[in-house]
Amino acid sequence: MKKNTSQSYSAIQLFWLTALRVLIGWHFLYEGLVKLVNPNWSSVGYLVDSRGFMQQFFEWLAARPGTLQVVDFANIWGLILIGAGLLLGFLTKPALWAATVMLGFYYLSHPPFVGLNYNLPTEGSYLIVNKVLIELVAVVVLMVFPASRRIGLDRLIHKSK
Image (cartoon, rainbow, N blue to C red; front, top):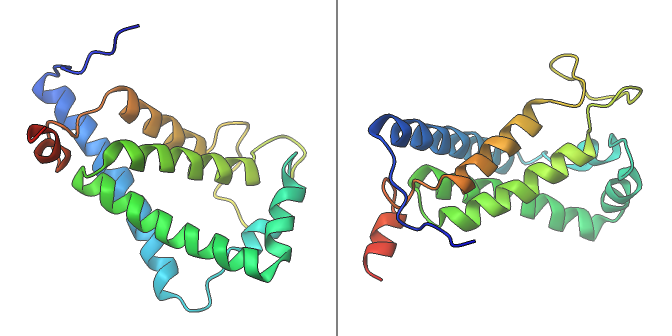
């Protein structure tokens, strides 16, 4: 299947794709900055509260101080860099792939399945679909309908090629 690199969008499509990218970017950037400025933040509580078929993996990450430091660092700076990239439309494709991986891990750590109970408070009752899964699907939509080469710093990078 040949990839169409000269996709054309209407003004309203371009507006909403860009709005979606910027809003998701803001969400990632804000979450990363909040964690960065809080000297007591750690992912340990989230990891040990994990349920589902990957529970042992997430508990393993939390149980090793060195590994936990790497996870915390990667989480904070991953959120910040992904968020900045999406906000600016800069290196959008790698930022979207990284966001997909990160959101996938968040979803697998706390899947909203029947019978799984968490110690951390949730924002409501979910069955399979939660806000993490919705944001993950929105990120995939942005991968399928790339607009950053039209509105974003990626436009400057790809214009020079």
